[in-house]
Length: 177
Image (cartoon, rainbow, N blue to C red):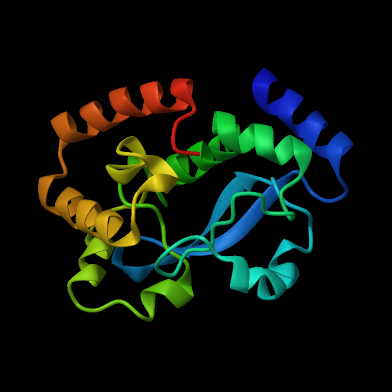
């Protein structure tokens, strides 16, 4: 709670807008839910996205840009430290997410999935997962898909504990952000 309070103050002082960012994502069995994150971008970030699409550096349906002008100064720090993910613990308590699993997808992403990729929806999405501990944002989209599908097949307590242990190292090293 003290960390969240300090982060909330920093976000409010750093830019106008709410502290929390809410977005509809697709969970287990295609159930929609609102994911919670600390806001790391300007409030009109979604409106600005269309103008930036030509500068997308990611493959697949994701948008990534090294120096994304929509990210606030405080937001850069929050992303590097993964503090922006803390509110997702509420999603875990609500049962919308688990600590480990494939990242929850946006609704428009799932519309393009084939039957194999839709297998991701058999498990509860997580805050961290296989590709997050295998290079984070540097992992190619096709590799992420393969890792998510592998997780669906191998999910279990031992697998989850390994991923959680590796997540701590990745966050402390601030790698692949």
